[in-house]
Image 1 (tube, rainbow, N blue to C red):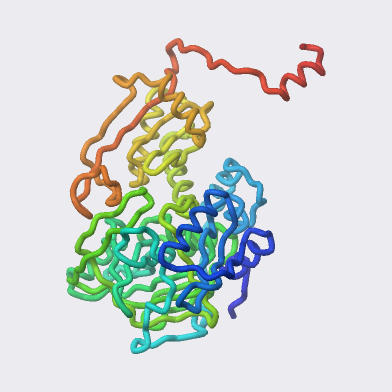
Image 2: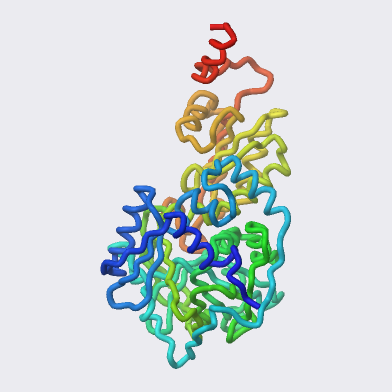
Amino acid sequence: MFSESPSTFRSYLNLVEKSGELKRETGEVNAKFEIAAIHMKVQAEKGPALLFENVKGFDMPVLVNMLSTRKRLAMGLGLPADVTFEKLNEELVKRVRKEVEPVVLETGPCKEVVVGEDEVDLTRFPIVTMHEKDAGPYLTGGFVVARDPETGEQNMSFHRFLLKGKNKFGVLLEPRHLWHIYNKADARNEPLKIAIVIGYHPAVGMAAATGLPLGRNEYALAGSLVGSPIQLIRAETSDLLVPADAEIVMEGEILPRVREKEAPYGEYTGYYGVQGMRPVVVVKRITHRRDPIYYSITARSSEVGYYFIAKTVLTQERIKEDVPGVKSANFLHTFFYVISLKKEREGDGRKAMLSAVGANDSIKYCVAVDDDINTRNPEEVLWAIATRCDPSKGTIIIPHTYGQMLDPSGEGEDEARVWSLMLIDATRPLHAPFPERARIPSLEEIEKMKREGKL
């Protein structure tokens, strides 16, 4: 039987609201541009999650800015609101090592209303148009559930969907798991059944963004992040498993051998993605709560980074398998990854960077620094590069590797896109003389010196 456990979307939103971290907006707003503009303004001010209850032309509220702060992430994971990045990272490392299998129920709130194929009308959902030159409204806050037609393995992932009609989306598939799964169905001239899930607990979204190896259960990872099983039910038109507490589930098919124009769309890189001929989704069934909340992620929202935090942690763990001296690793900016480590032998920095780019295909620039450098502080990272790296010795460029489709500096189109990788070893030599880092004692240390009569 379904229960509103701490790992459900509504229980999380209630917690956020009770903590003063959710603001209900009752004034009329427009889904075209205005919601996104308000979102980015409030995010820049480190403001609350926003629930727009009066969206012009729609009878459904829109939620944005849900997971844009470490505090709200901590709430979703049952951690102290003031948790540091270091403690957060430590806790996530512990949790991801022990997966918690989901439970499958007979039914749940996401099936309170069932919309048949003849009644499907995507235009009644307040799908947001964000940027002035976007090709149209884009569904961005939903993840996709699909099964490999050969192995039967289920996969979850995020993609953008361009509204193209009452029952149709255009979709961008980057060369990741869903792309491979769809290509198998496409080669057979068979439609690929999918479910688009909107409105879910943050841990489920984090798991969907992680990119686990095919065959690993993302719902089990989500369960490990919150310490309790995720409640699932079977979709109406397939055997796909979706969260029982989801706000909205759109069931449909990616059509075989059909391509239509998709894009432009302003992506998280800050640039418009170029237009291309891309697959088409036909929605054949929609289920939702009686009072559904539509969730949207604005492309450049910091939410994107928080959803990828589990992937970042797993990348760090993969690097540490090769180089145990790694202390921390994270993205400092889009495509820019930094690893701090205590070197035990020369070459540890380079080995760590090679492991990183093999484990995470979103890394274009990778920097290795010593463990006295804060990997989240751009000034310290740049200082290490400027003073500890001789470019002729510490820089490696690996040309023409697989590139992110959304990187405008890459070459080629869609799955054929390539880029070059730059590895920067900004670690001090182990066995050669190197100046000691100068530091001023902290005020706390000075006070202690005074108490001990040393100053």
